[in-house]
Length: 429
Ligand code: EPU
Image (cartoon, rainbow, N blue to C red; front, side, top):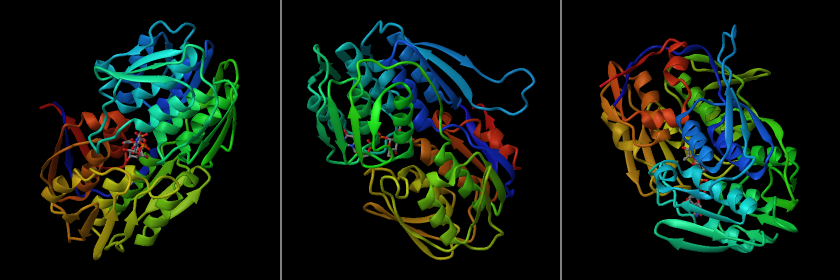
């Protein structure tokens, strides 16, 4: 298994191109199941999760053509995907595929909406909590589907089609909101989704569905109104920039006393994060082409942060913040409220010299004078990148194992960091 080797202590300086958002690209690709016509997606990141989802969609009958780097092009822009599902050839999503990536479970709603039936394995994904799917299932039931659980599979049926309804989500859930949207757009009549997730990736899906002919109101708010239509058509849509990748590289820059331009980053997607980072002293400049992040050394101010659904501080940046606060001047408090078991990075960061006390859902991070290199293991996607951030600042060599997690969500990370002066490489075991 490959590992990442970092020799820490180099300042990050230069430009990093922000990729398309993984968590927008995945539901957008899934939306191609809703129409016979071509859905063209631009700025799709090159990630293992995208490749896996392409295979899953291929299984259902989606034909995918990928246009990558063109001749003569020097920078790597995102890929353009053309997805076309003239016919759904299989409404079953098998365990072998779905168990490897949670988002693939979201094929349930479009398959059901278009074909009147779907059999989808219960999902897998990062080990960050129990991650139930009850909200997804009650949502589909509200729209008139019958749901049975059998042998680890969800069997959903709506032979006469789905019917619009009022859906009040008992908890804010990104996935359940995606699911409700993709089911409601083809349902008969009106649907109102209350307590909907307001994450930019949900708004991105809703905007794309609208281009495909869906009637959706309230985009970006917690109440979405959907007027069902008989069919959707093809469209072209550009995946929005990855706010989690942006926040991660901003913290990596600060961690190394760096000065980095995050090209293509959008400040409006991470206001709460920028406010938190600014409160530590980090300099962040909003420019038309992106964000410039700089820190001229010294200890950062500690913070007290709680993760929460958008527009709050994202859980997907919690591990990176914990790593960053190990160089703050004093005690920081980072409370995780979205997932109950998302602190696997704490013991690994401790191997590099971080001082973190975990009490229930809160990490108390005491700043230290410096981190040192060591051997650590990635446990989930965002935890792995927090180890990279720590390794970049640590004295000496850090070796990170199980990096397949990273490839799920960070495009060409060694290359992007390497171009800014980091000494980072992938080594075969
Ligand atoms: N939840 C339920 N029941 C459900 C669904 C969710 O109780 O039926 C709970 C979850 O257990 C969790 C909370 O609701 O406590 C929020 O989960 P949510 O459904 O919003 O998460 P998700 O849709 O499974 C997406 C992202 C995650 C991100 C979360 C929260 C994708 C592919 N995944 O997951 O991203 O952490 O929203 O913002 O969009 C990552 O990229 O590393 C990642 C884990």
